[in-house]
Image 1 (cartoon, rainbow, N blue to C red):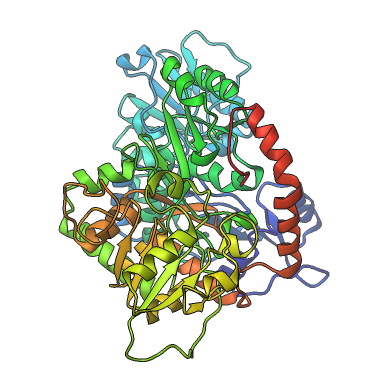
Image 2: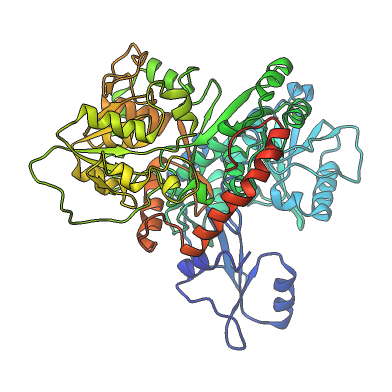
Length: 625
């Protein structure tokens, strides 16, 4: 743990990590190393998770708070702020905040029993836990008792008829409302119960201890030695700010109340998707066939999610027959620095329980959001700020391509960009009824813009040789004035006047930059009065302002992940990460090195035919991703 927390420890101590004959040792609190060093009389800094952590915290991803001591005395920190008590009451935070906020409780709670509060450190120490319960049973000779805590309670040696043990994790704040009294093993453990206004009794290992008042318990729990950190950046922040951020993460985690069964998710996608689906009912389950997914979901009372373009054909039918909720997953519109086709994990997804945004044959969750939402001024203002930040930071979905400051494009002539697409992409096959090839798009764009200076940009996946849709250069130049493959889409959008597309996200990226866009298909951003719609049936029956479209597509529909911290985040936070990763990368056409590019091309040429056949046996079509 210490190795992973080096940056936090150095930030709060102001010292560079060091250990040796003349240095102090940094050890995990409660570890064997601490015991050995204490016996040797060596100076040491002990570190443990603090009283406030998010459900996504770990040594590898960072903790929202740490408790630090030097030679047994609290190191740094100070008295908690006056408003902290009210914040904790309002947000109802406790320990790691992974327990379901409203778990079903036994009928016993209707009689308001006393609670034996088992904190996570006690739950992890069976002997100490047993001793604590023994003390409570001895001190309370009559009445019903319930042993419970946020990390659950392991089996106890004693079986007392009046003691009920809740093995599953429980939200203490929900319990406080249903009990007559709370018993705790230390004075600081009384903090939250006292803040909730419940009578609290401390039975410490050294004997009965005076129960502090709420202010003192708060100071013991959150005072000297306790340091707060931003859960994403891991930088020190005031505890009051950490409380609000942990509460946001707790709510994201609690929102996944129903366990998720994934089907057919490629291994390279799993780490990120697992974070998106983690919740109080447990981490997601991975399966490879429709039958296994439905069986696992029925057993766990779970929902099923599948990558939209890799969903087994029988899955929807089997889920419907079993009454199991099914959703489709796809990348969001701010994804990564690098291509999905080169196995670059995505930092945003959409989870759609009615369809999927690129397939107009069925109304997607995004279409319903855009059609039905009453966009409040605060949401529209946030969307405007987010849109302007994306433009100012020059971000796009993949953030690949080279910048080109100077060109020989003619001045005073209308410049039109034609972004190519992957021709077997579902958005083209299902969403562009009249024009379905890049050559056809280029010809249609020239026919509509005979006097324009036409730029053709191949799709990065096609340009990399990963996916179909290439137009021979000589043939493309009989129609287009320039080929601009390898250039960053944001640089091109800065310099053009108009975009012609089938269903490309480049059309949306052009819209949010104030350009005119003509669509030959029916992408999610068409039909709202913002584009020139050339495909039949594009009208959605509602007109939207640009920032209303941005609110639906960038805020309400997707889910975001900080790809460094590996925790859910807001879109504004992801902009910081994408900017930093892109700025740190060596500029390249595809954000992929030459060796890896060669390996990936070989993979698509040699391995994919085999994978396609294996997927076909499971009822899955398309290329592996």
